[in-house]
Length: 252
Image (cartoon, rainbow, N blue to C red; front, side, top):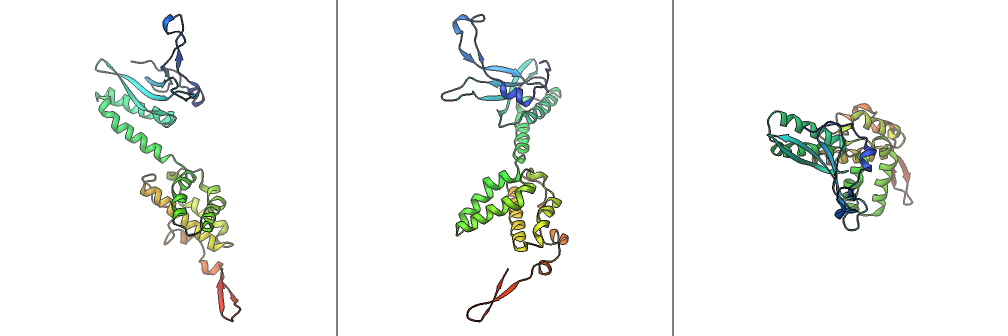
């Protein structure tokens, strides 16, 4: 059974590299780079494989693996590339595999289920702003008829949404967060507040549809958020302006 070593910090893991052969071990291979296995700690048998750079790479590929004994045979199971898979997630997956192995389950058959869980958790660790910029904004931009609409969307999200929930994971956003971002502008910039709420609603709804959020949408208005605000008609008065031909026009 592999030894359990001291848990390395993320910074220490980031500094790990491949190994270069020395003349002491093998004079013929002296100076030649080759793969290195570094124990990262936290879970016995969890290693970071560091490969030599290929082609124009400055730093070689890195892969997290767990090495464990199963029926007197050593099994090495890949958990994903670093930094695509955070080390904390790899440690959690490694612990699950170790439990399965101790229960007599073949780690290779268990790997698919564990990796699926790992990917699902990793997918959910995306912030509201990251998702909005990578998914929602590009889609809306293609459907808008003018660049003005696109510019207004970016401005609304930048000024009224991202400062409140931009850095929050999609899964962590709650109703109170939406209330707090709408409240400062509901009475002073009501039309803008409505548009902002609508954008937030559809961004979260899209995340739910793509499996990035399992909870209900916290930006639903009817019979939900509307209960926390006075009616728009009470706080936002439509102004009437007389046009040049004498017909009244409305503006907000």
